[in-house]
Length: 190
Ligand SMILES: Cc1cc2nc3c(=O)[nH]c(=O)nc-3n(C[C@H](O)[C@H](O)[C@H](O)COP(=O)(O)O)c2cc1C
Image (cartoon, rainbow, N blue to C red; front, top):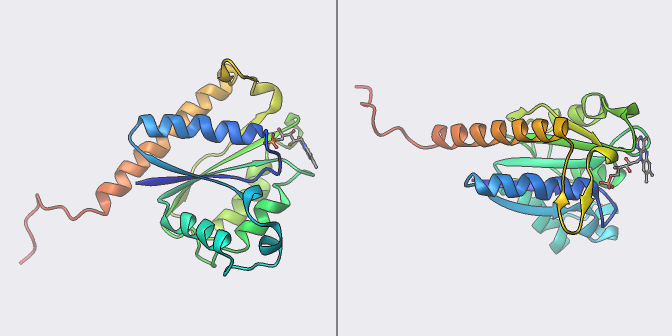
């Protein structure tokens, strides 16, 4: 039961990347397997040329294909999600999220664009036919204090939203996994 943590920030010290770690740690503690992918680590030329034959791009697309769920984080750039995230999503086939659960996250410099997940990213994700898009979580940089010693320490409202998001994703993943197993306890139809 694997979860892909997909980061769409060009920044190496990304608050969204820290959020993905935070969520990933909690999903692992609940028995899920997590893989990580930062779009900025992909070869830029292959990404911009849409070269799906490139080995790193092909491996990244395989991670998406194999995941049951994707937690996707983007910073707000110019009132929307980032261009590098869109460049990657554009490489997915038309039904590239078929059957998958998606938990979208966005980080912004202020509350001005707190609806970005609803007016921008959600539509793009929906066009890729996911099984479900969970309620998104938006946080400003100020709500996500971080230190080398303490790691990420989201403020109380964001911590509560993250806990709800992780709990819902985990429960939905276990439900999905039960649905994909044949129920041998029931009699078969005659
Ligand atoms: C090019 C650029 C554009 C940005 N545009 C916005 C914006 O429109 N609205 C906003 O709230 N923050 C904006 N920000 C601030 C980032 O969204 C914010 O710093 C975010 O926390 C960065 O996330 P990251 O650390 O994961 O990269 C912008 C930052 C950059 C570098």
